[in-house]
Image (cartoon, rainbow, N blue to C red; front, top):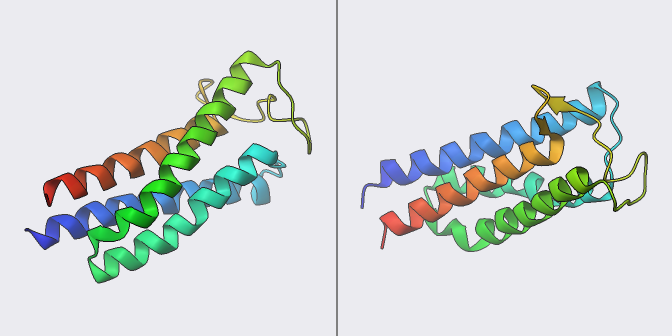
Length: 135
């Protein structure tokens, strides 16, 4: 198989993870937004992906999907549920404002969990594409 294509896929997934991680840190550390419990769970899924995918990119190991895909799919489910809660606005969790509150919207459309869902989805799609290419 074309290993440069594998590395490109892994690099793209890593870049998505870096942007998502940087964005979450920007929201909390620069804008001062306090992450709710579901945001913390999504961070638990995203932050390790940066390291896992970065190392896999360096070593050109597409087999990393066995580790990375459960994190990205699990994080995606949490982000989808969080997005649903924000739209339904009937369920609340703790910390500052609750999981149903929308603290930030990009272009008035995409809340933080929506952005996380996009990132987790892109990583998952990239990993699945990379694996399917090699089978």
